[in-house]
Length: 257
Image 1: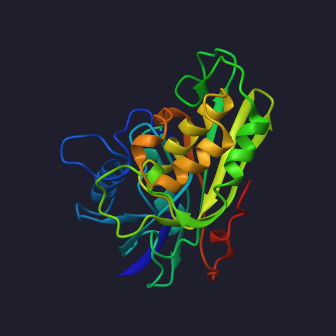
Image 2 (image 1 turned 30 degrees about the vertical axis):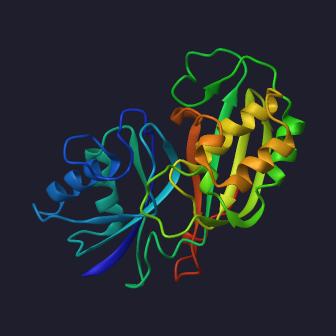
């Protein structure tokens, strides 16, 4: 058996997140069903680089699988794309070292959250429409307090099975775009619901309902109930995942493309 890394993109609108569930349509379940048919009815278990929640998208997502290909990689990827729904696209496939792990070996993950100020029916599943005026300069100052290694329990879903809420955030910034604003955040790891909780609370800062000092107090409190409601899932994308140098440099994608 050889280990293969897959890079995919997906529109998570009509899926109940990445992780397989017995009664719901998920990204992992959909891919495993197709691999089962493509691999002579042999079950292929795939391991993703992380979990995305219901409705969340991914521009760049990686998973690995151990299997024997009975065709060349390009042909296998072509057939896989033909059998997958339009909402899931395989971007690349390559054999890697057997010990490379899609989840545990990821060194940096980047998420982007999209916000648009003008009502647009073509963006309703891919961005958060906020008509109120936001103070992005104030929001950026609040976002700066996220940088560094610290406890993010205040922005984590409660009652998860993690042993630690410590994350190392290396980037948290707002990017101007022609038709809206994007919040980008990079870290070595993320907690369940962390980005959406951060964005929801930053919006309260932008609406001047919270001060920068209030935001810092929420972060320090380690209490999820003190933070704001989570931002809607449709605006969130897993944007990039960085791995150590491998034989094929393709896995070394640029952190912000």
